[in-house]
Image (cartoon, rainbow, N blue to C red; front, side, top):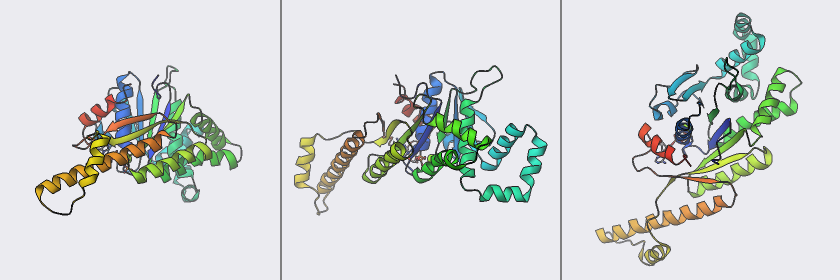
Length: 306
Ligand SMILES: Nc1ncnc2c1ncn2[C@@H]1O[C@H](COP(=O)(O)OP(=O)(O)OP(=O)(O)O)[C@@H](O)[C@H]1O
Ligand SMILES: [Mg+2]
């Protein structure tokens, strides 16, 4: 069974620039093609997820991006007002509270509240029911900020559960935390590149997710892999001659081949180190034109089809 199939909440994280947004788009595409209703959620004003799915920019209200795919940009202030309205069931009262300068000072000065408002809203949509009592979405994808911030974000519900006094905030954080820790309903998708620094950081990230946060890791996506070009024998033969410092065209060709073989070796070493984690690995190839169009995303989505 595919690692994602029944999970309702997937948190996509990894180091900056490794392909989190691209993977979120490809995964949304693949899950929607299976007939699942997918909500993609992003933080931050500048987002490229919508363009990858061929849709207009995301708004703080949920909009349709494609067949079976909805999207929303998570904005702390909007999320907190929505949450207040949900709990107090009175929009006028909520607006009066939030427009008070004391309250806005309190909200902006409370550590973790901004992160929780974003993650909590995404979680809420993962458990939200439509008017017919069915889940509104089958799966919510959270395109998380780069590693450090993503981890800080995941720590917040745990901290609330550990230290907040009993009340609405804590009971919601408890429900969310219980869901995030349940491997049947949730999972973290860790994205990385087959290079040394991202691999080191990924090993640390997975260790923090497992031992500190005890969260289930659904998959490790190794993105932008080069296709193998040289056998081991060929690579070792190349290393007997290159790199060469003379600048004839023939030497340049040999040096290029050597650099390519070196990248291939590093890539294999990274895959072996990541394999040691014992987490299912999904490989996505490097697209030479970049992964910037809906067609490229559709191609990468086929890698999630199995
Ligand atoms: N498989 C791939 N082949 C080629 N280019 C890729 C691939 N995956 C991602 N890219 C390119 O790498 C760049 C970074 O990708 P992306 O924006 O998805 O990363 P990110 O982890 O979301 O970055 P950030 O941390 O800034 O949010 C983009 O220009 C994207 O088009
Ligand atoms: Mg991104």
